[in-house]
Amino acid sequence: MSERLPLWAWSAAGLILFFGLWQGAVSSGAVSSFVLPSPLEVLERMWKLMNQPFAGALLHEHLLSSFGRFMGGFLLAAVIGVPLGLMMGRFRLLEDIVTPLFEGYRYVAPLAWVPFAALWFGTGIGGPIMVIFTGAFAPCVINAYRGARLVDSYLIEAAQTHGASEFRVAREVLLPGALPSIVAGLRIAAGLGWQSLIGAELIVVSSGIGFVMVQGQSNLSPSTVMTAMAVIGLTGLLIDIGLRQIESRVRAKWEGR
Amino acid sequence: MAEATTGRRPGVRFMSRSRLTGLLTVATVIALWFLLTSVTGLVGEFRFPSPPDFLAAFARLASTGYAGGTLLEQALQSLRLVAIGFAAAIAVGVPLGFVMGYDRRAEAFFNPIFLVLRPIPPLAWIPLAIVWLGLGDASKVLVIFVAAFVPSVINTYTGVRNVQRTLIEAALVHGAGQGRLIREVYLPDAAPMIFTGLRLSLQASWTTLVAAELVGAFLGMGRVLSTAYRDINTAMILVSMVCIAVLGAITMMILARVERSVIRWRKT
Image (cartoon, rainbow over all chains, first blue to last red; front, side):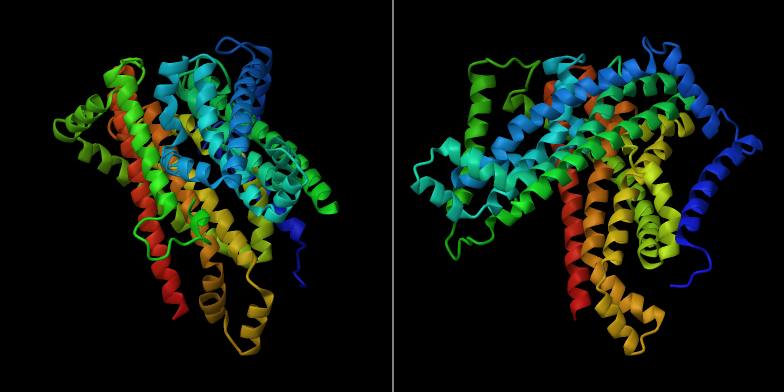
């Protein structure tokens, strides 16, 4: 390939054009900053929200309460979903029982659970955790199930002939064999869970980063809304990078054994 | 889990064992539902509706309507918004993804912009869309567009990127022009991946629409859901959840049918 410009120059051009057009449109007055705040205004707003309480708390405090909810729902989905998926891969009967219910549940958008979640567990902590759970649950189950199906049945039989209990089979054969698939599922689950949390906070909650957006929206402050969007995107990215690290570590270990 | 059934086909028997177990499960769940609500009253109507309440709510939504419209009107409103947003997203997203996969300069140009925008969940665009466009149809179409756009770009891009080099070189050796190369090598080879992207896009469209309508809407299935929530009408909450799921399933089936006909067509 003998392009006149190196590829990184195209990348830089893309980013410069994107942010340049954005900043330029506002600075030149073509677009009112009441409609679209410039990137610099968003950064300024972010700094202000970190030092001045908005909607009852500082920006990072809101983020922390969102993150706590997220971890609650995500861990719950993993702790219930992964064993269920593994057992479904191991026992045909369980698979046959769960599959029709699971298929029905999968078609219900996670956010459609918000009303029941709020009625059953309140709008404080329990309700949002249930919404995150419904978002994150499916990939946990599906990937654990697929992983368990990939485990060679000879391995299971070998363990059993050596007198391993069902629990030991699960812990020492099924789980390690399915691990790469499980971790990949957890990554998908985290993405969906984080997104569901934002949705839940938009609708019912009175704190958290999603609530900051709602307040920004009703105050007609796009810069607040966009600040929250940036923070949400960044946090989601960091969660994904963290899980990707774990994934590649697990994969390396798994393939190296 | 469709894949699960392959490898142990029931053959010509009327009903396989797993089918039967599945039916039994569903029957048991319905019986339990009856038992806990109508018969014993262990679960009150403000927690979960009983089956008769559920049917009554469905009949009411279908005939006289609820939250400003009958089932047909509400469902058509939601379907229309999904259709517009989804169609607009793939009309822009698939060509963009194609160009990114086809040309390395386009890839280098657009990819960083994507890396910046992609981590923002589609639902996080809802408040901005409302500030910009209000609570009407336009803001919903915008968020559906954003939600459906990303998967269609990414998957088309990946599909085109992974077209086998040997195929491309073989076509070039035989003197295929750029037009024929795209039509007869790139598009057919990338089609399965493109359709995977479309499925994800469609799913994202529904999730986002429900969220956007819950946040605020004048009509639509999400509006039914949020009105039922405000009235603490659990029967209507369940009815709207089921209707949303069924609508989503129907559109998925249509897409699967389109996929089958397209892929069959390219093989002949």
